[in-house]
Image: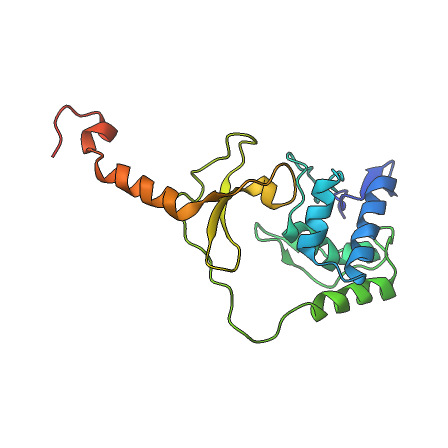
Length: 205
């Protein structure tokens, strides 16, 4: 039906072939998950150890930086069991039933199920949800060292910090910069900004 396959496989001469190092990485993700490690911990471990990214369906990563969402995506991807789910459209909606034994199986059912159970057991039931920290510089501020977009993090005590998005994922040097003083300084300078400074017009109102 398609030659496009998971990143731990490649298509060659009419069949799908396992990529040993990528298969080993996927198996390690499941092993760590069953051992009680969450997506964030696995992400940081892989980034710190420079574990090569397992390519996504049909494309490779340009940054080689693991993300929590991608780790969790692999954990719930039934392609590891050999299943193929046909999809259609821009949103890749499922079409029909999954096709078993389409890809080579690399994970056994009991390991897959154990990983799902471990993942579910780490979910915290009830309690207040963490509020997202709003930032005036979302998508605008970049770390001068690694050029990554900076994000605002909280230490749970009310303190907020600007941190490199790459460093937050466990790769590179983690350096915090207090966000609120930065925000206040930014607003103070913007207060004195004239329209002509932005538009280039000779007269300002």
